Image (cartoon, rainbow, N blue to C red; front, side):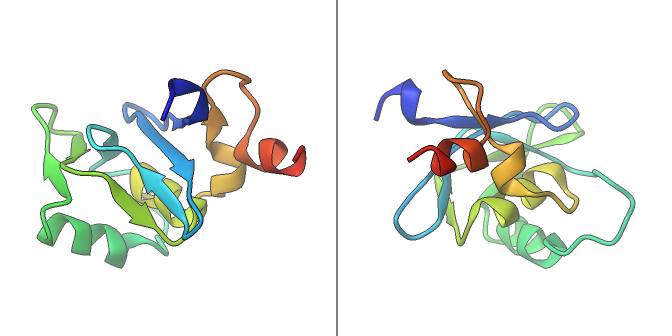
Length: 111
């Protein structure tokens, strides 16, 4: 896997790298996620809390961030973005290709 195949999402202080897979969307180990994001109701909060309990997301040296302790495959780009942001998010619009700077939506639409 080259860096050309990755997408990035940077909400607030977090920075996560991911890519589409045949089964969903993979977020790379070492990516960060917000501990507290938007104060609104969060559709992905239960998933985020499960990832914390399972040790996939661990507290970082920065009290505002979790770190992915291992690669994790989500069902799609939107729950991946929601967990990273700790708030509702449109994954296809938020994940940006590291090289072309196009959104996942625009990149997949171009194929």
